[in-house]
Length: 543
Image (cartoon, rainbow, N blue to C red; front, side):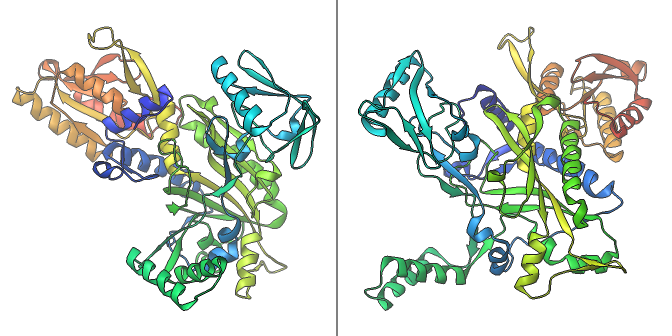
């Protein structure tokens, strides 16, 4: 796993070396858009999910959990609109070759009198200017100064940028946005990405037989007709995998209300796998074909939905920041109308400043009664809540967070480098300053040497006591004590406990802090209680 950005490369290498994340089917060349979690990565993911459950269900009076099927009836996605309009528009910069989500660029309508394209070097600027003059906008007036290529804009229409030309105006087709970074208007025709993925019992051989039979049975049919016949046949034998978890909650709302006897407002939450047919995956585990979502659906009365969406976005931003080291790297961004999903009237994204730029980790969307009414109309039975005096169709405000994206965000947030003057092989070494509540390993216990049975015995017993107290604990006696400290700094372990000669003579252990590297003695009889108290404190301390 090699990436252009040094920080991203360092994080991904550490994640693999320390057993957080591995590429799927590595020995067979890997599978695009799919990764697997190792021992530490699984614990980190579970700890983040546990904190999310606390915030949405276990600490809430009106929060309830559900767990729905990955495969729903195909009509569900027709009714919800996902089979037609779900996904993001992606494009490619014709100058740089880079692919990106269309709405990440600067809006064309904000262009002033000059269009300035930014190249990474003078040599590249000259190369781009030649491409523009020969292929993309012949006859347009272009001026190069340093790394900037400047073109005069005469006007902007809904579909074209009108540039000043040598023999009159030059019309350049635009798609509403400029490429981020380069500010190039020369973009490939956008394509939808993130549509439905399918699963089924149809083998490649059976699909080929179906195709041959359709062609033989419809001799002379047009290409479009053959394509439609094969698509219909494929849909018969394959079911869509859910691109989101939410639709089950809307379908089962009546059953849930009857079972819990709860008045509005209340929320339903679930964590589970989702699948999307992404055309461009990455970087690393940010955008995947198979991923895990944390979704919470807040059902409430109609007139409260707009205010609730705003309050929820503030609450969710606070949650993300509560587990972060660099809190300001998380921010909320209100989406423009053009960027909204088909079911939302307004939405706010929680974004994290990743090494390559700011990207969404969670979205809070006001879905109003769109989904409930859509399913109700599909089977002619729209859900209405009756409170004794009136009847209404509840609205839904949804928060949808990516669990894999949370793992990546907190790995990037926690990654740091520490001076290692005593290490002759390198000047700096990595450390993961993970928040105590999500750190995979809470405590590491070592005997200072492995060849003294009395120290080994005490260390093993102490590690067992920590586990019995509910703290995930690792025991190690391999390598020098300094190397073990370095290993657990990379794993993100907040505290290491060393059993040494003072344990025998004075009844104390050495407690070493990951963040400060300070080593302090503590009575062996007190250390378990002290760390249990530390981890049970619901504060913002990361160590």
